[in-house]
Every structure is written in C-alpha cells, then in structure tokens.
Image (cartoon, one colour):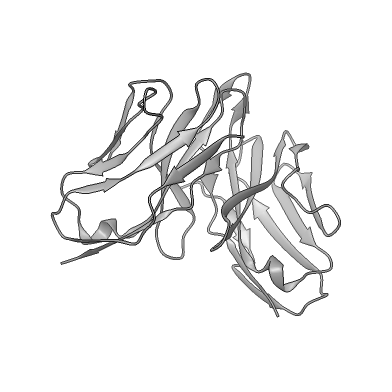
Length: 116
Length: 112
C-alpha cells in the first residue's frame, strides 16, 4: 500500500530555531506539493516540484522558508528562523503530472508544527 | 484569481439524514473540481472529482455534479453514517494549472 510519509509527525520548537520537515513521495510520482493548513487561512499551497525542479514557490515566504528535493525520494521544507505565526499543519502531497494530464494528489499525514 | 467558497460548518446531522455541503467557485475557463475528505489526524483523501461541465462524480454514496451555469459543485449523500464524520474540502484545479485551490473546509459531525 503506497503512501506518502512525512516526518516528524509533531514538532514543538522555540521561536528562532530551525525546523526541517521531510517528505517521502510515493515511488514513481514525479510531482510533489507542500501545503500549509491553519484555522484562519485553511489550506494554502506553498510550493511544488516536478521532476525535482521547483515550478512554483510563490506561496512561500522567501526570507525564511526553503524547499528542496535532494533526490526523487525526498522532499524537504525548512524554516529558519521559525516564528510563532508558522504554527500550522504542513502537508506534503505527491502525484503524477505533466503533459496536460492530471492525476490524483496523494496526501501525507502532515507535520503539526508548534512554534512557542 | 481563482477561488473556492464552501458553506461554513460545523454541520451536525443524525445518522441516515440527508447531507448537502454547498460549494461554489470562481475560475476562468473550465477548471476541474474535487471533493477531498480529511479524517481526524490524517491527511486529505480524494473523495470524488469531475473534470467537465455536467459530469457527476460519485464515491462511497457521495455525489457532486459540475454545474457550469451556477459555478457550483455541491456535495450530497442520501444517508450519512457516523463514520462519515470528517472535514470535507471542495477544491479546484484551473484549466492551465497543476496545484489545487481549496475551500476552507466544512466539518461534518454525525451522531447515532
């Protein structure tokens, strides 16, 4: 049963600390998305990659957030320095895309981040 | 820009009641429309989708019809179960886009 995995599931940190969230997409999927979910804003797209190249990161605060795909099996989202307003659940999703076709996005269980 | 508006929750129903969760959208062209469901502590799962006008998506007793004339994609189920308690998200993917744009979500609580 192929699934998107995310680590850690929960993270509590103090303001100013660096936070790294990891995602393992489903094997063979070439598109990876990062979303953030908060009560106030709902689900927002932060960034997405296709074939490991960033296609859109316009939803991400550039001064403190960075997203990378070191290889096809790992996507990372880093916040440095973290702030209390970054507290949210961060979801990774993967899918197959490109060539005008769309397939389902499969979501991971999320990382719940609390910045004190 | 493109957006999705869905009814505010929570929606509280008794088992076997009829469910409607309203969803309307704003988008240029012909977006694809989706309903996702999120159970407590889990990620989102695709419930159903429709990719063109008048298409009806259906799954697990849930249905939604893509209405271009009213820009709507309302979710319905004839008889809800306690196990349907979850948060439901309406979403669209623009005709030229890849990423999803989500509504704020509607919490459904079903009691026995």
